[in-house]
Length: 391
Image (cartoon, rainbow, N blue to C red; front, side, top):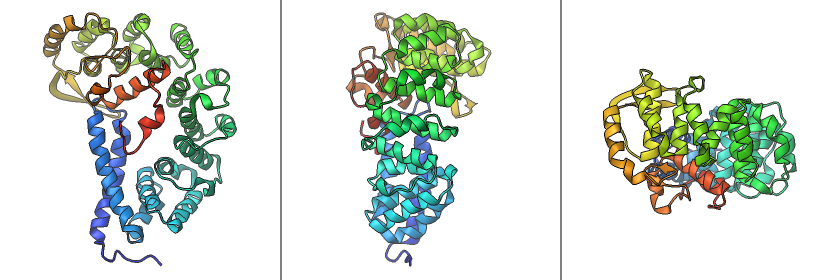
C-alpha cells in the first residue's frame, strides 16, 4: 500500500510535480523557438533537474503525487513522472513503470521515449505489445548507445503509423552509419512522407554522413521535386556559398510562405542581406518579421520595434527597419570576407567553442549537424539530446 507523504510535505511535492510538465513542454519548444539561447537552456535544465531530484529523493512518499501524472496519458505529465520514478533507483518502482508503459494505449506512450533515454531503466524487461511501444524502446536504447541489433528498424520504417516511423528515424539518427539500413534505397520513400517526417528523415541522413545527400538535396531543389521545402531547409544548413543562388531564388518564391526568409539566416551568407533588408520593409508583416529573425540569426543583433506577431509556434518581433539598416552599415565591412555568419561569428569552418553561449538552440542544432556531416565534430545527436544539457 502506498503511504502518504510522511515527513515530506505533500503540498511541497505537489508543487514540484506541477512545475515539471510545463517545464518539459517549454524545453521541447525551445529547440524550435528562435532566440532561445544555449545559456538559457542550461538554466532551464537546472530547474528541471532540481524538481525531478526533489521528487526522486522522496522515493515512495512521492508516488501518490506522481502516479496520477503517469496514468494521465499526457506526454509531458508521463515524462515528468517517469523520469522522477525511474531516478529513485527502486526495483519495484521501475517494474511498475515498465508495466504501466505496456498497459497504456499507443497514443499515450510518447513521454516514455525520453524518460527511458534519460534514465537507466532495464529496458530488456519493457513490454512491447504494439509496434509503437517497440519503436519507443528501440529509440531509447539507441540514444543510450545500447542498441546493437538494428535490423528491426528497417521493418518499422515501413510501418503505416507515422509515430512508429518518427521514433524509428530518431533511433536511426542516434545510430548513424552503424545501421545496416540501405540508406540510398529509402531516400525516395522518405521524400514522399508527410512534411515533418521528411524533415526528420533528411536530418537523419545527414547524421549518418551520407555523402550523396548534398547532391540529392540540390537535385530535389533544382527539379522542384516533392519535398522541396524540406530539402531547401537542410541545404541551407549543410550547403556552401555555391548554394546561395538557390536560396536567393527560394526567397523570391512566395509559395514557400513568409518563413522562407529563415533560409537566409540558416545559410548565413552576407550576400543575401540585401534581400532581408528589403523584406523587412514589406507590407507583409509576417514576412518582415521572419526576415528580422533571419537578420538576428546572421548578425546576433535584435532590431525590434516593440511589436510582436503571432506564429503557430510562438511570437516573433516586427522589425525596426531603420535600425536594421544602420546596424548592418556599421557591421558590413567587418564581414566582407565571411561566407557563413551565425550570431555575428564566422562559422564556415565550424562552431567556435567560445562562441557557443551566443547561439540560439536552432543555430546550435544546425551548426552541430553541419559540423558532424562535414567531419568537424564527433559529438552526434546524443550530445544535443542529453539531459541535463552539458554543451
